[in-house]
Image (cartoon, rainbow, N blue to C red; front, side, top):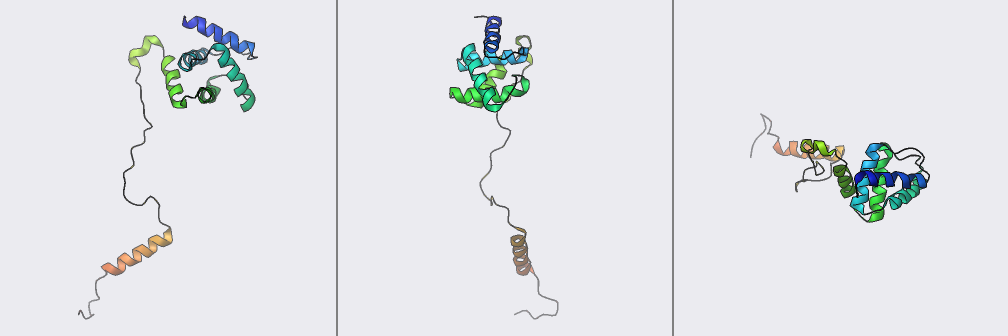
Length: 147
């Protein structure tokens, strides 16, 4: 099935459920990718949009509301939302510019290393600890007798 045929069916299904505004091309590309990756028909996508828009009080499906709708679709399909977002984004990339695309994965957070306290001490605890350290490292006064 051609991509343009799928996009036309998606547009038609969304109009059938009352989405009167035309869907932007970028949103249609994402919806076509979601349809393929989540194995949902255009009618199922439109029905899920209707439910999502009523539950979340969203007027129109556009670039701003696509993320929440995509997460709701993934949740209903039993798929990880991150996997749905990756599939949607990867499939909507312009095919002519595929060689210029860099795929970055991961959260960007490094692994935490064990050791040390994971709780920051209170200011009072810091003062008490500093006082103990200062007392243990203090040298005797110049005139004091050393045993």
